[in-house]
Length: 91
Image (cartoon, rainbow, N blue to C red; front, side, top):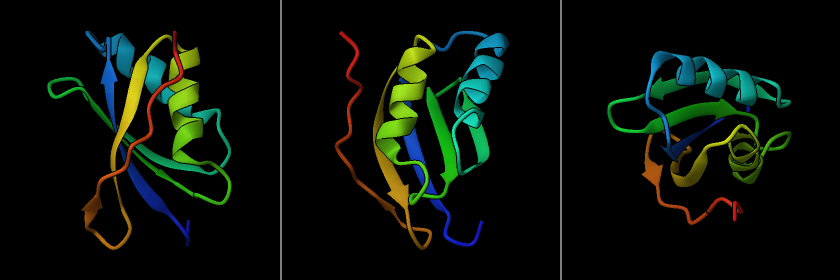
């Protein structure tokens, strides 16, 4: 992916290795997804994606549909994490 962006999501409800598979599957169904790294210990998911094809809000929505509440903690453009304020629209 030449125009890749890396988004860091804070995810609630991850508890076991099967959650990793579930999260990765939900995100990989989206268009423009590259690498997906899940860290159960700190409750984060780092996603490399093409922002022209899939936005951070799309990532949050996909995780919400999979049963996980999440929000955007930041994104990397040139290796620098910048803050963002996306939140899940789950009830």
